[in-house]
Length: 127
Image (cartoon, rainbow, N blue to C red):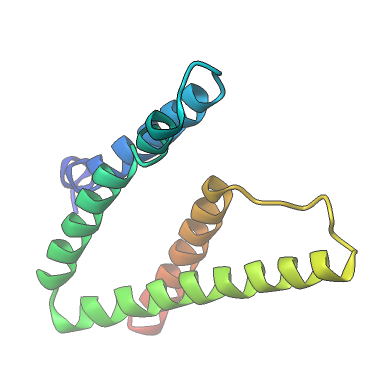
């Protein structure tokens, strides 16, 4: 995949993250009312949904081998993040990691890096 294609494919993800940061900054102000706060909170959902549509279209355009590799990487990323989130939550419930909290950005970043690691492992396995 060329750089241009990669940027085109991930455009809506960048817009969603930018909208999330903008909405977080906007929510810190006290001038927003209840219903407007909900609207600002949901601001990143539309570009995120458009990103999901782009990813589904891309996944359906792959051949069988590439789909399998992407599925392996996706499973390792999401299941790895699920394990990390469960472990952190259990530590917090036990009172050991009470100050350890992740925002959605951290969960997204960790999942992405686990996905990349899974993609590297899948590429090695199917060489």
